[in-house]
Length: 293
Image (cartoon, rainbow, N blue to C red; front, side):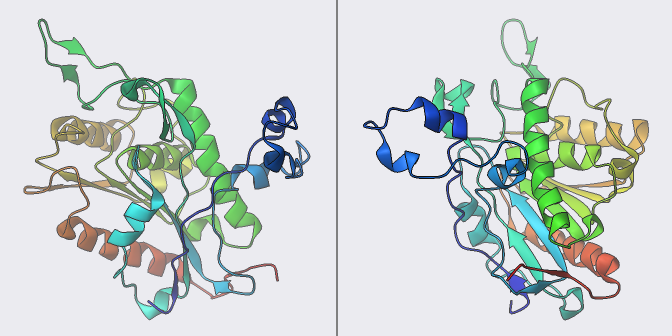
């Protein structure tokens, strides 16, 4: 694990300048102490305020951004990857574990919840059982698009620091996996790869109309449990098939017979092999990104 950067728990996202200005000085004085960044040039920094980057001066060859599920945190995912090993030839890999913003959740009575976008109802399925059965309410397209832009901002921040997009891999579980899938499919240029574990195609259609050439050519690994009671296995298999056949997406779907809605050991082994394979292919001449000192 010496060549891999596993950051500590991510910090909370900073308050926006607009919110700070609306608060009275005697209400929350400590929040007003933070200097509001200029709207244009520092917008990128504001968007990634909840990311922990490698320490200054660290040379890195590639990066992995891993997104957690709704209602969970980055710390829960970090524990699962504690013993993750990659070949030395991959070089130093920086792992980033962003935390989703705190937003009102429809399925939790609009209580503040860590989530990348709002989910209207569970389970994630084609039809909701009832009398009669009815189609499940899909996610709002604008909400999903905003989450994709947030993730794309993280990727661009790494590019600015010198890590090529071709050496940046995205991965996620549950809602994080759904966001990874949509982000990869819209990427203008190919990424190193994408890992979707217990995810789905968020939105109202199995094949989004905004799939790019970069998205089609980026290798995707989709792991799913046959006993998943949160994201219907049949729906996941149908969506994966539609992406491969109708949109010619470079995707491999793996169904694990005994796995539920979880990152089981079998899936973690498959993910480890995939990440190693993709980052080795992306390696090339080692001139990785250097952190500003």
